[in-house]
Image (cartoon, rainbow, N blue to C red; front, side, top):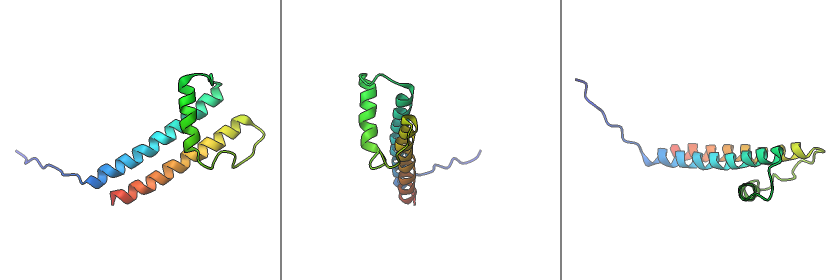
Length: 99
């Protein structure tokens, strides 16, 4: 019989996964807001308002950074750039925490 080896994980790996998970959740909120805006979701709906509130918080300074003639493209640029930013930043900090 082969001996079973138990791996012990350091807390660093857990912290890195939590940081990466937070970035993913933020990016998902921003992408859901983009989908709601492009699909013409009812702005009076509680879920749409909740997502929009958090998306505006997470979008930071990206809202209005580029001016386009298209409202759809404007939403994609504003919140899409913010989603990419959060994935890159939290990915960077997750790698630092995992070392």
